[in-house]
Length: 245
Image 1 (cartoon, rainbow, N blue to C red):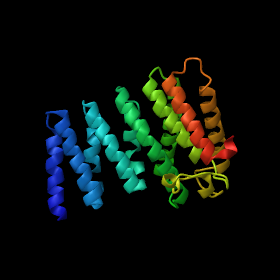
Image 2 (tube, rainbow, N blue to C red):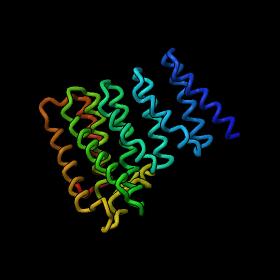
Image 3 (tube, rainbow, N blue to C red):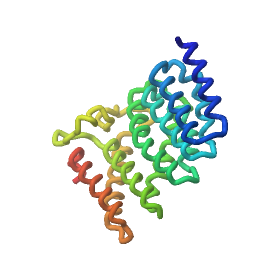
Image 4 (cartoon, helix red, strand yellow):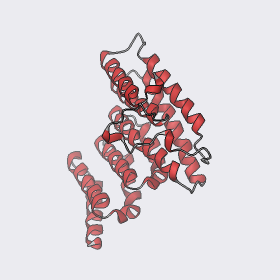
């Protein structure tokens, strides 16, 4: 069974590599994603590098598809984050705004996953430290997009900052947590003696992030779309982290 799947994956990757309609090539890569991550995840290591090769494809749709693959791969196995961090960083600086937006939306999940994985991980080597340093730099870059000239980028940056305010803080007895977020990371889960993550430092970052979001709502050049997104984010944060208010 596994050999048949491997042969099919090789065939699909080869077909996706050929020039043709982007929509057809995207379908081939989505099929690869399904076969690897949903049918036989043990094949992920075998094909990860080949799939990541499409991150420099000329088609924005192909690059967006690779972002989806990376996000699901990280959800399946958070240790993959160390292997894909360079790809994430490359795609964050993509020339295409739609690719950037897709990457930031995926980073909402991946950043949250990274914190949860690191908080439980006993192995902290140089690769993990380097990955976290890159993750921190990406976080700073995404936050700076609140000043972007593009409304769409500002909107997804708001959603990313909402996530930061939640994961870089503690839940309290008064927190109202949606069922879908019950398993999410919060600083309650972090031990004081973690080798990379410093709870007090992260908690201060969370407060700074919240302050930045509140200041953003006072901007004179704020569009109605961004204002609605920001107010929605603040309302959600207030429900889940009333201590901010």
